[in-house]
Length: 467
Image (cartoon, rainbow, N blue to C red; front, side):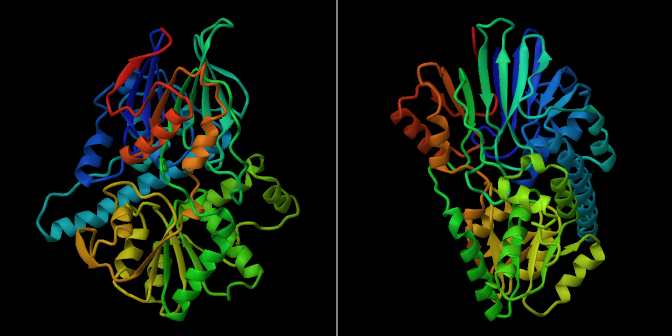
């Protein structure tokens, strides 16, 4: 079996890995790369390490755009095989890919107006809504723990990763006999004790492990303190008569924040101030959540059974139209705006940042990982000048990072997960979906724990397994 690393190799975006065995090619993930604009366009448009028509199947761990977002291009350029995913991942991907295409079309239209003013040539969207819709008939839904044959000699089982709704670790049994080998790809691992989802499953059996390393070397704030810190930041901003702007992924992070705000309002920890979720995708994603109670932890499942609303529709204003989104700019009182995308690379959050980063009364609250070369990373680096839609804006607003909301396992979580495996059986550990510094820290801890053959492959690296 040959394993080639194409995306999320020494970086956290554009997840994509290729398995080749028995003359078949299986693609793990097909995510969008996010970073410097020119580099992102080049990497996302061109599948330069394989031809899409040669791929026999895709296996998708979860629906986040950095894992699923380039599927429309893959299909557009010739892929026609099945895409295996859990039922919740399939449903989320349906709305997220369409939303990604629409955002690209809208952002391209807006950017082209700016380019025309400067007499520069127009650009085209990476893909269209029609391209995104063409992906959906290829999905094959596979429930957790239901073993499914992908190709001859390869059987797939999804195990709950506890990261976002429907996220699954990809367990592949290689070989037709009882002496077959097991390859485990974690996708993105979640944390224990998050507000909505079940905890990640404990896995003990693998010969080869490809494990995410996003927060290698870093520890999150305790989950128990997330409500208090969120309330503290909002109250501080309210005293300044400012706005709280929260860039958040539309799936999971937005629902966790709205659930937490719901609790703070119910407990009267926070006074009632207007809260706006400015993202049609977030509205649609929340409806998908309601369809998949099999993913919820016991507390949220009980609320749903009792017809309670864990996602705060009683307290939260959900914005769909562009016109209503623009009206938020005219509000001159304390409000909270939650908008996508989480890394501030596209979507309505860019407009809210452009209108609010220059006001020292406002707060930009970062609640997720910000990859290198993204606007979100430049914000947490407190760069004094931010370029948004090609125009410069002074960063004067307060910037707050809240890692207690992170849906990614931190260093200790990753080590606790790895320690469940027998280091005598585990032949290789590949660290993916992480930056070099964090991967080095995680690698050292794994070596100290007695594990061998650990590496963090670069884009294009490949090797033979199970010879």
